[in-house]
Length: 331
Length: 308
Image (cartoon, rainbow over all chains, first blue to last red):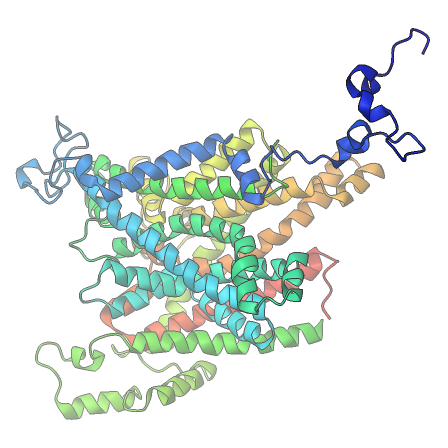
């Protein structure tokens, strides 16, 4: 070197031992740490292992839509679980002299035709909608997920039969079926009846999505490797296939949770859903219909509550779908 | 192609039988005895009840009843409803109205949904796109009956632009608002589907090829992108026709339309099993045929799909 300096990576002052040949060595062999291999060879173990979910989370954290919907969902769940925290007015305490009364202190949304406090009814109505939505979604994911996973994983005649059954249930519109079946429980309907009816006719969509996801996952190399290692089919299904096929199922479950809440409200609106003694937004909207022309606010509040709840779940599903889809991910 | 159609027709048979049997069992599992209910509080004498039962085949085992019902469907001999009207007449009165309504809703949601979704997809990430997406979410989240009441009140009653109810006057003008309400939710889905599809196809290889060989952007977008983006939309629209006809119950109730939904709802409430089963069966057939047509349309839209 003309100026007498040496390249930085072989400064003798620090690495004297490394650059001198060791006993038995005829040629100089650089230590691995001083070769370009070191850079390639080194795995940065301090960085977190990347997985689909971790990537998705990193993406979700930067989405406004996600935080808005998460906050809304949390608020709705809180109201549904502890309505007493949000109002001290009894939703069933109605005085006719307050009929269609304007808002006043303690009664921010005014009164409905029967003189019940609208705000308190909106707060207490959350529980019915949310529980129907959540329970139906659980039922649909369990039933549809099981059917779809079995059809996609085992294939052949099993798949043929299950797919035809799915087609049959698909051919009957959900609300129509629920109306017909709702009549079966016409006396003494409960929340669980409504959940059962919606589950029985709501599962095919989840089943189709699960089937598709399972079929695309089961041909992956790690499944073949697991098979070669002698894992049983059931353990492959449980440990590899279902966790990796879960993403689209979660997305469709979140979105359909909103749809089921709308379906319940529609049934209650038609008088074929929840029993009259259960406080529900669907009932309140149906009753408010008669006073729409004079007091639209009575219809407005339960409708807005219902729409916001459904919106929060659909937005959440949307955000999660975009985050899980590498193509749609914005970086 | 012919073999494909044949196979699809064969596949329709189990779905048809399964769906109608399911409906049949459900309807006839309804609580209460519809025959006894005919007599009101006094009830019917056993002889009369037996006679009516045998008239409606209700004295036979359920599976025989179902087979007789299928025979009636295929020979267009639908029998009478409990109130004595030929069910064929009831069908002939109700279906034209609902078909008109559903087709109007379908056209509205297809034209507006594809149009707006197409523009939004071309400008993905822009202000227009964001606004449209948010609006579509709101439309999905607000239940149909709320949209119906609000439109009926503001457009029909307050502004008086359109008749607030339909009643006996089944004209295009009076059906316009119900059709908008009926198609609103599907419109949002069509819009979102088109938008996603267009945005995805814009970066497809064939679009780059088309641009590279010197086609104008207008032609690339209007012909190549739009045509390919319509494939999933067509699937949705086909499946939706059946859903629109079956889902018209709420809309027809709000706007007082004497169509399938209204008749069906009354039949369910009044316990008219024969009418219910016939109506639902026709709806299922519409759904199945619409799906078949969609599958065949695929070949026209996407030359890559060949039927073996």
